[in-house]
Length: 422
Image (cartoon, rainbow, N blue to C red):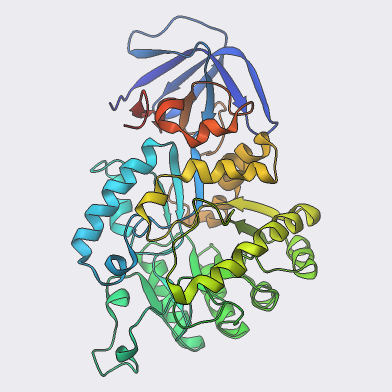
């Protein structure tokens, strides 16, 4: 049930995610989409709805920094070759489910999400805030090249593949072509850019160890982004690919499970963000085709080392799921987040998915589509809030069961879920 207007959370304990502690019972007043006040209990204004928070905690809405709004719930074949109208409806349905399980903001790291973002922002469908990257920019044969072999070379079956025509990917080779591709996505409304700088698991043609693009090509995208006041992130796993990206001016590395000590130290020295995912060989392992199995296993083996290196060198660490082409896994965002307790304390986990991820989103600068303070429960911040049946600092697994653990989910002052996500 959606509720707008003023809302008062009474007798609720606020989780301070900056400092990792839970406060004493207090009253939180939300008005016009913003947290107006936090303090002693008082009268509830006549125009406000009161929500009983006794025995519950209030945390910020969660942020997934590596999400594919259009592809998380769509199988690969459908995502790459299906009717785009159907894909948009599927994505809109999935967006509603995403926000109801407490993820009020996502950084979309590749796909045609501009229309979905517009529909959500306009109130046509429920969903999280989307920081869109637009099409994933890839070299020929790179991680974003999903063409079938008979589509190569271009011109035999048309100039663009289906994935390019619908805005899922943009294949660009050479400095001038990368400049053009980057500028196109910025023109369409990208808040940041995503390039493929190394091999990937899901793609058919590129081994995991290959380096993609040249430093000059990556630098072209960085220049285009900086001219618009924003930044470039890259998909990369290996030291060579990541070091080249850093030299080119890239601000954020996605994945990086195969990095070494030298490269992690370099990231820390240059203030580079590391958006890392807890890929493990467990019941939630991403299903991959046979040709990708060995690549996936190699990546998983590097996960433990990657987190250890990030901690050792105090790299600026973000968190995201990178769920792709798997509806059953898409609904487990909170479970994937809770797995971080393998390496971090619950307070660190919660901070990473709220205030820390919000700092990463702020790199978009003037291209930030949602001005305002995200990721905290503080006066003046946007009222993205989750009322939790319990305290996630004591039991982080509460984040994995939003259907029972979340009494209320609010996005910018509007209640989007109540009594669970169903």
